Length: 236
Image (cartoon, rainbow, N blue to C red; front, side):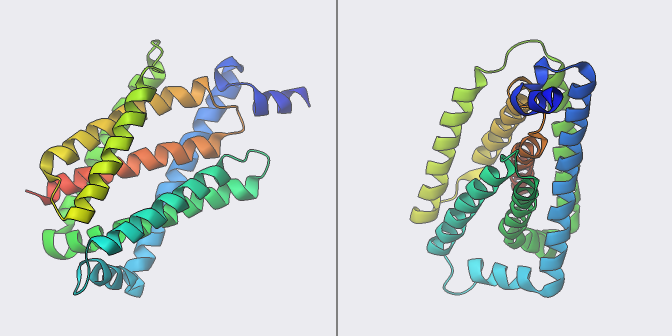
């Protein structure tokens, strides 16, 4: 009983090495599960024709900023709900609903851009973006995990950077202007900072039973980095 309570209340950094290693293993295992679910959902969207219809809805006749605002608004609300569900360490069913719900939301958000990329840019951009993101994530995770410096000072940067990014995205949708290459580069850098911070934060702040919530937070940063790396490659 005492060990179970420690897993639910104590930050992982205060647990024995064996419990800490098991927690990290579970986090990255569930991250891989979320990425696998994203690929499965995306495949289903393409095979069923939903991705094409979604692309036409966003970019076809009558499409525009209003539709993107609806999509982004729904995505943000859905992401918040999924994150809250994944953080409920006393309800495993809700945790996994949040994990797979987040994967489904990202597959819907990605569907129009992936459809455009596969049909007008070539699949090479998708695989290149995936490899670049995977290498960057692995390197940043290693730095975040093994560094002894406290990276909590990054939190205000992430908060303000996120607010500015959302403001620019909404402004671009409403006033129909292109954010350009450098915005994508800045977002890749911001997600790099996020991965560094979150990698250390999940060990220093999360309890041992919160591995699903930790995986969801990392999944969001990885997928956002992938999104902007793909945008950069599509602009070539």
